[in-house]
Image (cartoon, rainbow, N blue to C red; front, side, top):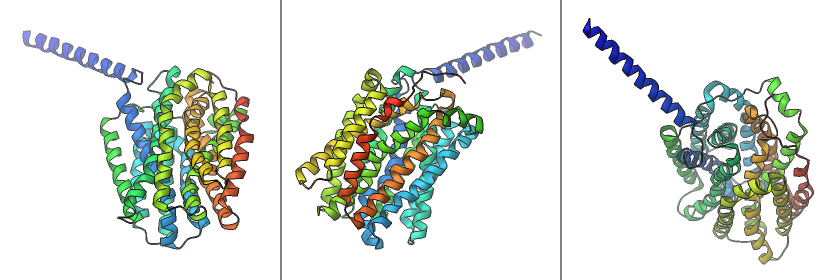
Length: 419
């Protein structure tokens, strides 16, 4: 009898210890703050870095791919269109996936698709195989943003969202620096296919580290059912934000995609020099990103977006001038401006609909905005490069950006609301 009493006391004590452990574990998961969650934030930045590099590495590789596969400017630029087809299509469906398997598992799935897709592109000897790989790469990359952004913002208080989203943007901006430099250093020694293998190996390492060490994101997203979609799509601010994203992402990704080909084919610069120049030009944007979050929180997203879009338009116009000195200056100044756009934009985007449908807001914004920026715009610039000049394309797009800079003032931004 005494033994049973002792066993009961031990069991009760063990149960109490287990409950206390679980409570501590839960409370630690609920702790918010940039410093406390810096390891997970860093891994999310690394995941975004890989997914971005895997998509934009084709920009500095484009002149070599054109020669190797005997493609025109427009045909080579269509690579970005195939990536965008997969990217945009999967972003819309990602809400269903995140509602089934959680944001964390969706992020892991994105890596599980993007890494083999990059290997497939490198290994394909036919245009059809490369296109399939590009679409799969877009599908993998498209799974990330609607889960990555809610995951990283869930780690901090709302007042720190601008700061953590600025840190998040280190991923793509570092990618814009590293991708052309990798190509400049390696293309003399190995083919463009082996460069893609190196990129895929980097993705495998990052995905493994995220699986082992990252926490957070263990919650499910909202599926894009009719009621949830109507909350977002019925708001005027959503459509204004979509136009802004198309303009801002176009000034970043669309211009970047064609810039090396423009400088090599139309301005006669050496390809290795161009890749180094374009890579170094993005360093300035990477440095600025550390100050953007605090500035957005202080002056407000709308005013900040206006200034960025307006002056980006001015600098894009300057890229079309004949003076090589002005052109090089514009190549260096433009990234400083447009890098600042994304933290401010995603801060604003998080306030145009209730927070519970945040993943869907991103799911609906990105397909439309990036379809233009990363798919349509490079093809249009490629067509102009074949039939007229790349410079005329930069001139026209710069004017469009200046005109679009007033759009932020028509956004209706709200604090979190229930609906």
